[in-house]
Image 1 (cartoon, rainbow, N blue to C red):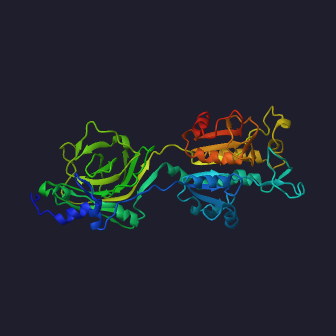
Image 2 (image 1 turned 90 degrees about the vertical axis):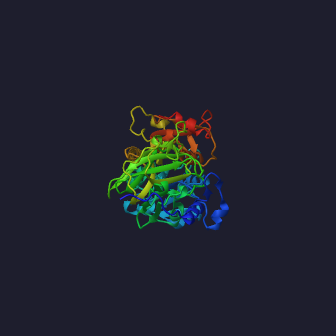
Length: 487
């Protein structure tokens, strides 16, 4: 049975389509038509990264929190006492109670949605009772008081660190992906983002819709070749600002189809009838599959005709997405799996994959962790922490074991080993070295800044290094230069 070649065209639906997307072909934007039909342009802004800070109330941790907030990151602070943490960090920060030494407290409330961790935890060390009348905190590099440990270093520096790594590992391994649409969590924003765009705009009579259920989106309808038509699609309103997927390799769609061949169309410009970048994919009847769409395999197309001299797809500026069922492939060729009539494609998610390799776990350790027991070490020339390692419960030895937990986790990491930490102002020149031989001091201000900067430096991935301040060091503003010298 064949379709009729002609059918009545629905002018009302044509106008509603234009109103939803706010454009008229070949003319451009018409905001008055949007207002007439009560529609508005879609704004989809990327959520800032969510960073978990462990040890957020400590000398370095509280400074890390402040700098992350100043740079627009979302911050979640893992603290043992929320009331005390509020007194230190203020009201405008997300606090979640937990203790790295108690793995049962590291619940999904701690880990859900995080994209990186900055770990500033450490064994509590204080002056021995009676050493100073006011029991003021001792500042290495400025003034020294005989110290004692309050916690058990093995539990904090090793077991606690390992608990934290295991709790966040699965979440951070997925952080190389970026979820663009999660249809398993339907929202009003999703409902207002996608709309039907069928061959009604070309005079055809196909009709489709996208419907959100409890855990999927269903793109369904009836595609007709009457009136020289033959496509049905759903498209997003233009994103403002455009989505930035720079550094990612492509897209992944989780779909369940009907055995037909569909197209994904992505646009680098806001034009209604401009160039789209296309990728055709086949579905398997009633079976969920993951469709991988490498950016470098997207084809520049204008009205189903390939653009031979078209520009390469640019992932940093995506204005819209479109899913289409069409009787045409490209350049007049027919879709071999097309049949007119009822169709259905279910969607679970759209994600970007292959994100730039950046540190996901930044650990503040200590210079000197490999020196206790090292042959040839002159303890008289070493900092107090090295000389007193045994007296302090093997604190450096257990820190090294904690580092090993991070390095063996499979997560992209940065291990920072500061020399003696001070309360001096930051902004000093810094020296990065490896081999654990340097001595000196460095401001907590500069270590906090270093940790935040490491999150955006690919060269900081999977490295361990010592840092101190020095007259001949690199400016703290030249972070790329500092990290580029680390192996």
